[in-house]
Image (spheres, rainbow, N blue to C red):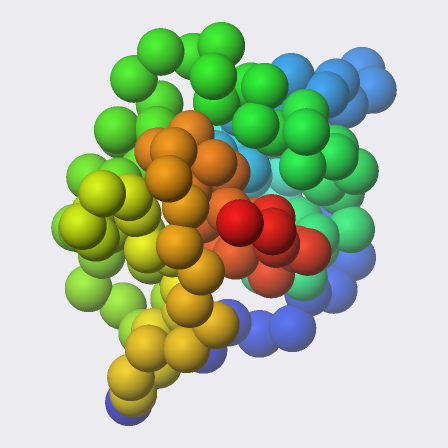
Length: 141
């Protein structure tokens, strides 16, 4: 049986500085709540070893899909890292990205594949994968 996180309660940011777009984009591209919480320096209030669940991050990530795509294009190799990270996943349900023919397939896996989209560009597929992981509105192929 999959381990469930408790619902997000009050979340506390450990720094006083405002969150930048660059930090939010870097956090989103980790496609992992623990790593994202380290970049954003957030923890569950009163529980310094617990990180917020995905629902918290959805409320924090205010960047556009165009900003995300630009961030991935600017950071050479990031799209390939996301492709590799997806291939290393062992948890379900989760978003995935994989090479498919002359392009890339991005979708959701839970007892089978669903919400499948195809992209010609790895950068577009990687951005769609990040959006799918965080359950944000997806790119249109």
